Amino acid sequence: MIDRDRNAEVDVWYIGGWKRSGTTLLCEMLGAFENVLAVGELSGIWIALERDRACSCGATARSCPLWQGVSALLFEQYPDLDFTEMAEMGKRVLRTRRTIELLKGASRKNRPVDPEILRFADTMQYLYVCIAQVSGASVLVDSSKLPPLAVLTHGMPRVHLELFHIVRDARAVANSERRSLTKTGDEPFWLPPGNRLIASVLYWAASNLAVWLTGRVLGTYHRVWYEDLSSDPISVVSELSRSTGVPRGSAMMASGHIVTGNPARMGGADRDIRRDDRWKRELSLPDRWLVLLIAWPVLLLLR
Image (cartoon, rainbow, N blue to C red; front, top):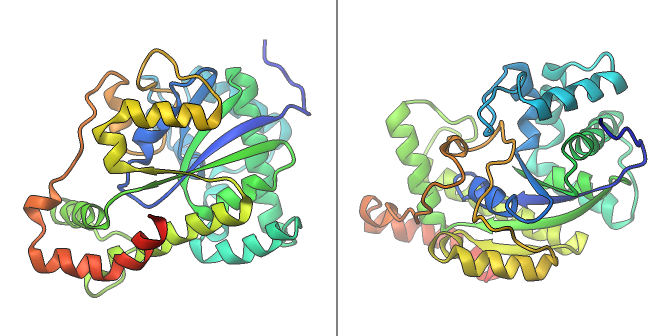
């Protein structure tokens, strides 16, 4: 029986960062804490539900008991809800360049005045509440990465936000993106024409700076380095348990109900945790220095 209390509140542990930085891994680790549920990148949930993508529980989104129940509550509240429309709205609302604009309002404790932003935020708030009601979890882990959604979540009356920031070596991120481009031949939409390596590092710097600034303004911030998390997960997870006051479970990871994020989510919670340092073999020395030259101001700030 689903609790339909419309005044329910939920804690959201939001993971910010840039692509290929270990957000899904951290999401699954936090999801193993007591009464915590990993739900992946909820910024992309609308397309995942529309396209019936696979859930980490082994079912598809439409056959998963959690997402079935959540969808039913959403349509009960919003009969005309259109997943595709919400996905397109999210692309406009959640652009990283809107972070400063949203933070200015958050610092004054003002709700956004843009009707589209208000509508998107209200629907996302109800999504969080529905997931908590259907699952029974007290805390949800959202690995959406995008700073604007963290700002909007902080302003939701029925949601309490804790911001986690995972940072990975810029050289590793740039190499991973370049390796993916070489392997698939697909052009990532976020990389403009020109030097892909430079563009990748600039986006890495802008995103991580935006997450850091968001944490400073909102007053909630837990930083995690990917290299530490993948090399010594027990120590990092134990420290996060102390800082959040939530006990960790017996397992290192929990699959949760993730329909968006790294395909590794389908590998099961018992898979090996291995640090990926292929950039040390694959990235040339000049490229390493080029990345560091661009990234060092942000790295110095974060350290």
